Length: 357
Ligand SMILES: [Zn+2]
Ligand SMILES: [Zn+2]
Image (cartoon, rainbow, N blue to C red; front, side):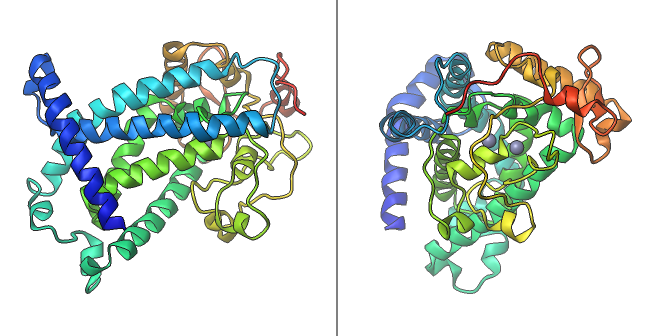
């Protein structure tokens, strides 16, 4: 079945590339730049599928069984606009302008892809070419473990938190929250994930499938819904309730509670490395640091600019490189270790979080 899906995918991507993307590129001044129109076509197809699934499954779920009831959705719109900009504009452009040339450079012009054999580390497993399910499963597990540690680093390295905090500043976490992230952080993460793909050795068509799956899983895990997976499955997979706890606002009575549930697809890593949190009722989401909380109410560009200012303040400061939890000075944007700040003040931003049921 994986073969059939891969073939259908390659066929659809080929048609969109030939009938839509290539004529558009010939017409645009971008046409002469290095890159493969198939990458744009794949990214557009992913975007379309993602929107259909959000509209037909995730949004109805949020309406039927919300975790939080909001009187208005005033902070959600910016995430939706950012998602549309990312999936239909920046992701295809980034794949075309940056990832293809870099991948071609690293693989010596794509010679491995032409032979049709599995390259990278997976290529060392005898007979892996005959077991595409196993190869894909193995890659996914390695990818998910890498993501888990990368995500922990995003929280504990202050210059990385300066950017990742934009993802967390949202007080109304919904299925659109996934693409709310700093563009520079996105570029940084893409290189790590693409680099991992090259090292492990994954087929290009499967890489597209992985991208779609990972996007959809993350849209789902941000969905504002009470839906759980039951006691056993929740130990294995990340549910919306599990990830919602990762987005919780700091609890002054239990100030370390929010450092939990970093997994993307598998909850196994959190259970294995002692960061899993279960059994808490839904809590208000967002970041208590007023400098980060000020992202709420900003538009798409202003929010990106605010995250970059925090990054610039952190990356130039010695405190920006020490593994620790920080807030940001509202004037200089330099990191302030939370241990030195007034935790009560940080936990009580001026404006109240949205009402919960
Ligand atoms: Zn996070
Ligand atoms: Zn999240």
